[in-house]
Length: 193
Image 1 (cartoon, one colour):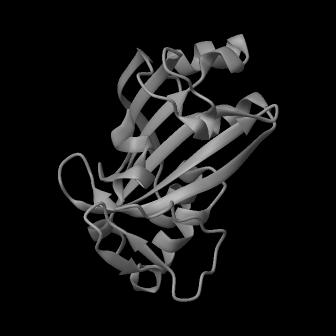
Image 2 (cartoon, helix red, strand yellow; image 1 turned 120 degrees about the vertical axis):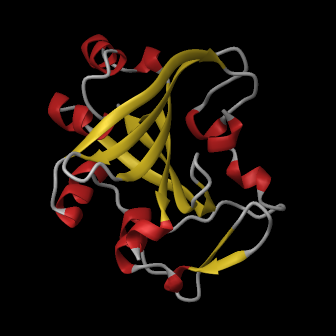
């Protein structure tokens, strides 16, 4: 759980990098302490890091092909540490979900997403559709008509599950004014150059 959602404590005492868009001379820090100027990233990747929209739809428009969400793993897990970003306490049970956003035509993996969900705070029908892995979280929120708000908490540099260089962002989704979902998305750098 901490690999994806506790990045701030892993970056040599650096606070999370928060960005609402343009940040002159902004840099992001790797877990090893190296820095990367945000201006060095491809423009579309910079936009992905700060968007508060549905990533699947943005990827479809950019790569011009349908994008599907492959749920690679989904399980309920008891938290062993507190996660203040979404008010998780040790012992709370959460739904963990690993997914890949993949182009239907090309088969390319555009992003990896790791989600932590406080299931007790979402409506039963939404919860069931989420557990049934019907569609991605963003599309599910949009289709269900739930009012929500996304807040980007951190961006940085790391590696995808297969070891490719990537940038990531961690954000939380508020539903009914409560932080309910925490997501870390990884975007492989080579794909966006």
